Length: 247
View 1 (cartoon, helix red, strand yellow):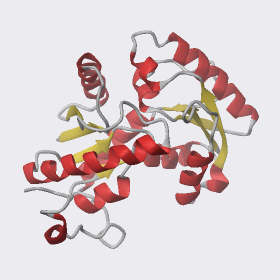
View 2 (cartoon, rainbow, N blue to C red; view 1 turned 45 degrees about the horizontal axis):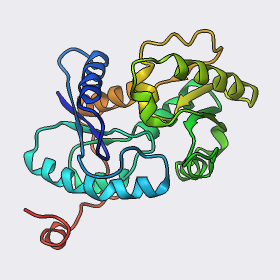
View 3 (cartoon, rainbow, N blue to C red; view 1 turned 180 degrees about the vertical axis):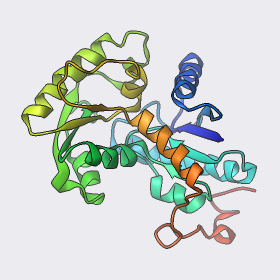
View 4 (cartoon, rainbow, N blue to C red; view 1 turned 90 degrees about the vertical axis):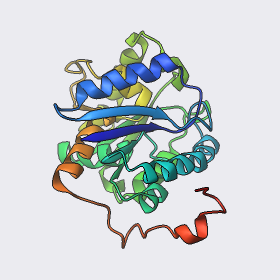
């Protein structure tokens, strides 16, 4: 099985990309290979709606090329906000997995209500975009709260996971007080830095969206499952080629 962890944007250091490939393959089961690729165009990180939307066009352009290469059995969008998820599913014939979507639904099997631990949005403790996404998924009644960590995403690329663990632990304790039975890490850089962290002191389960996304991709491929063409109609390539896509 060949999976792709596909990072929107541009500018992540090559040693971090290599490290992420090692981490993803340590999570994947035997017989599954995970490649990690950055789009190579777009924002450095996604911490605002502007950066999210600016990342989607270049990502779709590269996905169109990957569609023709037909190398991967499933593709994971490497951002916890699932940018371009619906469009990517219209474009591709293989399963496209969103870490946010898969982790939120998994959380609903863990607890009645869940919270999300998120980086700040453009330096502000704004949960509105995340709440809108929860509402879009129909999970508003299962959502307890958004808790924040005050660490920019690019600063999570370093070797020291200590500050992340400390802030996530504090945020998870707050989430529990707000009625959450579990928490979801709301950032993939946060997820990559804590794949081996023991969260037993937190008191509620901490869901790592990276692990859930990889296992969800494996299940899709194992079951031969594909996204519905009723929900995600196939793109009109006759219209798109020569305008937004190039053969």
